Structures are given as C-alpha cells and as structure tokens.
Image (tube, rainbow, N blue to C red; front, side, top):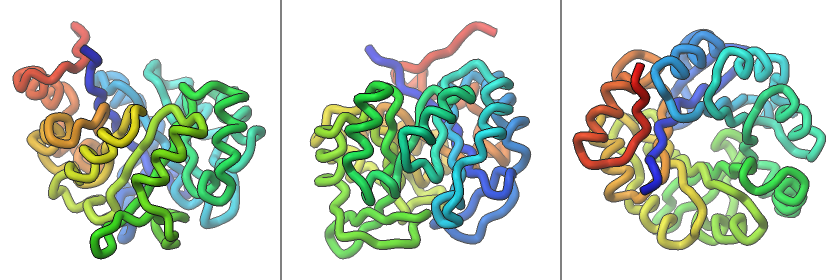
Length: 254
C-alpha cells in the first residue's frame, strides 16, 4: 500500500513565509529556512515552496533562497512561482529542488508541460491548479487566484495528464485558509478522472480534515500551511492519529 504524504507548504513573499485566507489578507509566518528545517525534523514527507508573487510581479523564483532551503533539509522539495521555461527549471533543479510546480505558465503555454516532461521526466513536474466553484463548475484561476479563466478543473487535469505532468496540486480557493476542511467531493472526482497522484490543498483545520482528504477525497497527499506554521497541528501527532485511523503513513523511529 502506498503511504499517504503530509506536505507543509511555504508560501513566500519578499523572502518571508506568509499565509492568508482565500488568497488575501496575508500575514507573516516566519523564516522559510527555519520552518523548512523544523518540518524536516518533524518527518514531513515533502515540502512545497511557492513564491506566490513571482508571476504577478513578472520575476523569477528566488533561486538563492531555494538553494538555502535545499541545503537545510533532506526531504523532497518542490518549488513553484514564476516558472515559465526549461531554463527556469534547470536553475531550480540545479539549486536543489527535486520537483517544480507550474501553474499560470502551463495555462498560457500548455506545450511547456510536454517540453518539461520530455526534458526532465514527468516525475519532477507538478502542475498546480487553483480553482474556485462558480455556480456548478470548478473554474481554474491564475496569478495567485486573481485571474479567472474558462478552463474547467477536471478537463484541464485530464489534458495535463495527457501532456506528461507527473502530479496535480489542487487548491480549492473557496476552502483556502478557512480551516473548514478540504474540497473532498472535487478531490474524489479528480481522483476518479485521472491516474496521477493528487495533492489536496486548501482548508486544513483539524486532524479529521486530513483523515477525510484521504478517505473521502481519495487524495494521495495533503498539503497545509497555517496549521503547521502556527503550531495548531504537529506533524508527528497528525501522523500518529492517521496511523490509528488505518491510514498508511511514513513514521520513522527517532
């Protein structure tokens, strides 16, 4: 049985970790290198680092910060924000990232996913999808949730799979930062529509929410930020509870 992964997310703005609600009202959550080190020690399975203002500000991800984080941890590390070319990915992988996360650039140039998968392998290409429920449809948004597209979440995910993406990071904008639980119905539908691993994002507020993301949502991994950054949920206790709920997780003896 494949183990389910717990993934802290560091949203970076101006070199600091930040967190908001529904993609707005950001507040400082600490130094990214310190947080990354802490999460590696707490047995997080992976880490995601998203430079959330890179696309909007039309600049590249902070490669030097990526290097500092990579040097501090020994767990898989995904980096996203402002990535729009093969060269961008080369730099980030050289600086220590294990995977890259593409979002707006994939929508603007879907062929980029084919190029990256062919050049680096699907295993290191994560496509992030930020979507919001509008009437009865989940619509994809870009630029940190600021730009609405006509893309349907499920159609887009199927296209990404066909182009060689290795994993989908789905964030429900409606649930983001609300601590009301993940979008489990949408997650379950995604899981049944495609054969890629799916990372659930947006809405974690309690241990039961993680349990539900795996049991109801059929997610392969669950990502969260503020509940970890502000000490509301500890990763060791979360994993212990998941194991008690018969959910397979990695727990190493300390």
